[in-house]
Length: 321
Image (cartoon, rainbow, N blue to C red):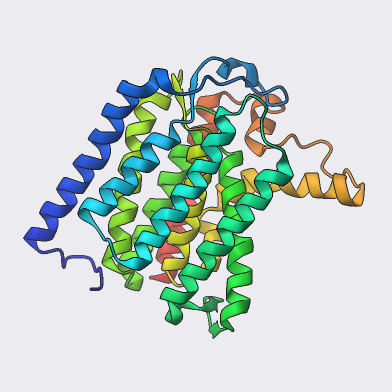
């Protein structure tokens, strides 16, 4: 079934109402019940104002990602393709949660390898179930590519999405609001491009799971998503982009997420492997640069980044309509 604007029948409207309510209420209730069972944040030594998060409940991603998966199983799909997606998103969440709980944070290489394995498995799953979407769309022309080349490119793509999204989780409400911003744009494009109804519903379920989490994560927050949330959201964002049939849409639709996170990754690569410190005057992640070097408040960073992303997304939607 293809999901198009204006074609939702009354029974489907009821399904949407139920999945929205279940996603939001389950996350809200379980965060209130289990917040004291979550690990306490240790603060971050090198992040700007990183110590302010010390003692807050961390790892809330385990709750809202599990609620998202349960919502999807109850109201959306138990097809093999989506069961595989849920399992891999759960794996991404679990690896992040175990790191959140660890007395000593996992090393970069350990986390990077785990992310890479999960990214490869997600790319392989997507390629096997979506043979018609194995292409690179340059907007003016699209090119079908070999399955294994697509898997290799998608693996790198998912890995970058995981790590870029993870980097944005440094200010109360920042990662969640930017992710919702991008997901709303993806579903709007999906309405025009013929995204399958199943995935459109999963986006709705994820949005309202994050909305419920943001109730507790709005500044001053009491709960943090941790790597458990940001890594799973990064995987889901990447998967949702691929479901539009155009991987390159990630560049404008997730522009601020990618920019905020990947500038830091690029800086580390230059310093560690090439011994070049070309970005020495830029603090990373980029949101810390604007807070520390430009004097922006947390609220200014969140609103300005989201406003810029919204403008970019709307322009893209207009141009490809």
